Image 1 (cartoon, one colour):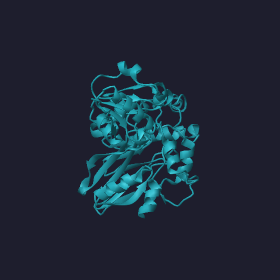
Image 2 (cartoon, helix red, strand yellow):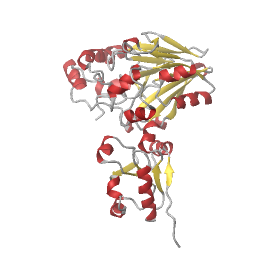
Image 3 (cartoon, rainbow, N blue to C red):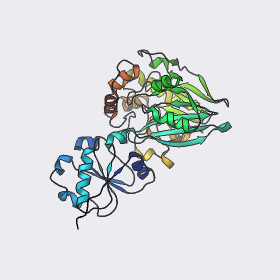
Image 4 (cartoon, rainbow, N blue to C red):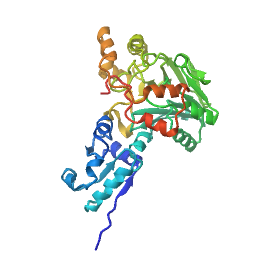
Length: 382
């Protein structure tokens, strides 16, 4: 009797659960070696190997000794098609539990996992949206039927649907700065819903659209219960970078401060001009804030930064003890650390900045391609 080879799709959402729940998963990545080395699915219990697709056109027999005999095997490629072809071959060998990544790494790059950060006073809620495949973090503050999104990603339908599920109307979309690693969805979402789009004016000198100026000490109220988002001017990653204190307990630090690193000042080509601002923000301005504030950054660089449930956060006082970027006490050494030997730039970062200024309008497919790869916003993301 002939056995039909069976293999199944696995969604990016399902893969995310393996990563966050620390369940074992073996990945056969069939992209070319350069793409694999640049960016791949990682996790504490994720094991992966890279065998380019063109090496498997004649069959998979030559790599079977590298694939575990038991457990789930996920085949991954850029878009999906090549992984389906290889997954079918694996299944034909009699190998059980074979899967392919539905939508490929493009789908992995775009998936957002909502994680509840906390209940806020007077019934409000704060959520973090973890873009696990790219390291981006967005936020939503919900209170009394209203919502505000912060550092909204271009997958705006996710935020719109989530707010609707919570019975809230998005009234504000806010960017902490002009992003260079991903395309903002804040303006698009605000225009669709009739919300207010906020942007720091010092980052908006070249934008082609109208916006609400997010100035230092600005207070944005969400709902009738006075959950205030207080703006704190914190330049360094960009000249307009602005942080927020939410509910007097949470510091949304944008790309200035991360859990294991600090922001880079060079993505607008002005590292030497902005390094002093970066140091002042981290070593003076933030020092004036309560050490009990919980830092919620706009990015993470390593999978190790994900905590319980996938949440990325840390107490500000603990970061002053443990974050290497906050412990470079010699100013000249600090200048060297944030301007020399930095990781390579994010993919297409100049075009992404131009898009976020409204100067160019790439198609959806072009935007997706521009964002492929890691974010590289920190000085230690190597």
